[in-house]
Image 1 (tube, rainbow, N blue to C red):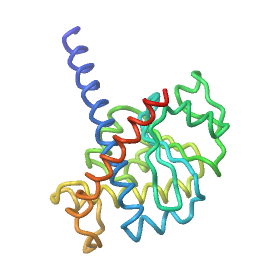
Image 2: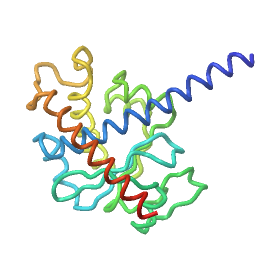
Image 3: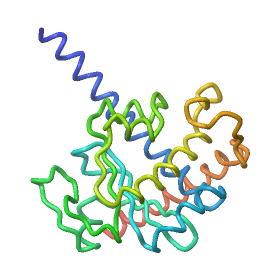
Image 4: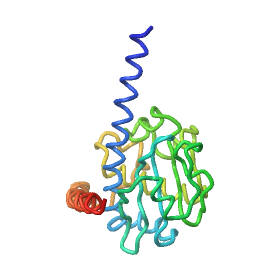
Length: 205
């Protein structure tokens, strides 16, 4: 019995770390697509400047946090609590590291109900709409805005996922307007920018 529990714990730990790593890559992909992909740019036009998106496993202190800027999405390398404080959003430990009652004109929070739910979505086993239909997602904010952002995630995943997995993401017959290699190349540059921002934040601390 203890051996089974240990295996389950190790599996969940691996999946939790995997979800975090893949979300980091997805964040860089969204940042690039917000500047280069027409569909993503159009979806983000409906959000005000400085609007914040948070995506992660329910209970995580450090979800993926992006902010809508004039020139596209920007990756925010701060704790969730710090971001909530800056936005004057109620935040407490009793809400399990979720903003709880947020101001929908300032922020959208999308949480995976479990580690397994997050793993299914980020590894392409389920598309974003399928995950929502299965009730794998907890959405804190306006549903219409969540649907728009999930479409951005789905388009970005199409650039990042292996070719054989695209059938689950792209509608039949639809082709990506940008070359996938071009997106990955721009993401490498974005990674160096993110690392520079992290070093700056550490210097300020």
